[in-house]
Image 1 (cartoon, rainbow, N blue to C red):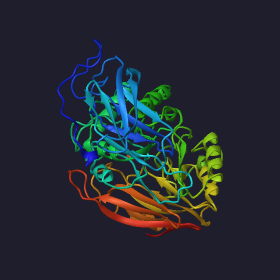
Image 2: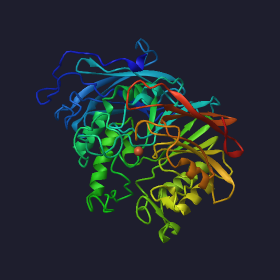
Image 3: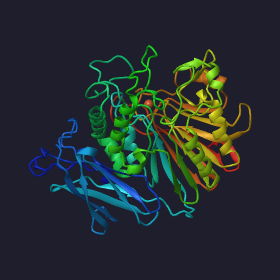
Image 4: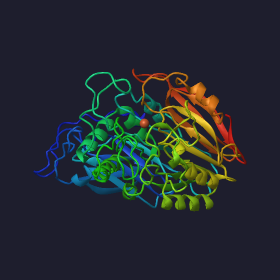
Length: 497
Ligand SMILES: [Fe+2]
């Protein structure tokens, strides 16, 4: 299969004129495509003969590449080709923004540089705006390198007819490599280097993740719509504020915005994103007549977690109607988009939206439970529409009925994707899940296995299949279906699939 083709074993080649020091295979991080629209796409690769070196082994010299877009994987019917330059300022990543493409069509693509050829990627444009055909897509999140093998990505790569993969974030974890097991999660393989703080640190971490063959296979098989969550920068950062350490103190007071900029630069360099997504990650996509995807940023414009981070009893700040999750500009953009939307209105975002009252009357202050007024405003936008919310972040699969007000009518369904690896091998249910469901009866489905969600939008239903791998601490897990739910037009909330 195309997506599983191994990297070509090519002889060492000296790249660049004098100043470049690159030797050996250049396309060690694979290829990717993303942000599919009816007429446009982004093609991505990064040259990195030494993925774990701060400069990827490329030195500072710009390096020319050519790219090809074809109808067939043998590249006999080439539709487009062009030249692009990989520059050190972007870590020798390239983001080819194609436009004027035909809608709803599959393509194959590859790059050439210094006599070497990249693996072949497969991608597709979004269907034309009026196209009534069903739309198949995935929701995935949270791929901690140390916690396991990316087997779920290998299975994701084998899915057919996927319009896009939404990645809600935690595409890396910033934590230092552990010398021995202990601490959070299993230690299956090690992070290279210490806790990420600088641009070089984040580049090395992204590159290490990108060397994974299963992750490369998924990116070579389907276009991604990438977002970020906290761990692309730091655990539970919020707006201009970094995360807190175990003592509740901010990690790098005053220095966080620069660190965030470095981290998001590295994120952009390693994702198939257009240039504008580096500064504005919230954006909208339309897939035919059936689906509008509103990709939200629940980190960059939010207020600090009220009452302190973590699971806490509500303090006065939780009731503050001014508290923000999206910020006024993004909220206005969302309001406008939903008002002008057609078909299923799907919010693709990060943090848990349904209320979760934990034992001892505690709430998760990092999630929408910390900003109930902002949540009520957002859910009011969905009332009367056929709507669903996609979530990540919690490393478990969940589904919930969402009501605009506690005890009020249901307005949408929430589908929470589990992690690819984060927190290691799964089990049928997380400890305490039964109690959580009993206190929060709008939580309608739970599974504690790793995996991803496979969705399908039809005129008469939006489906969710919770796909699971039974283990991740060893390679080779099979793919199983842990649950199947749906939501129907005109009848907000969940039904069996
Ligand atoms: Fe995560």
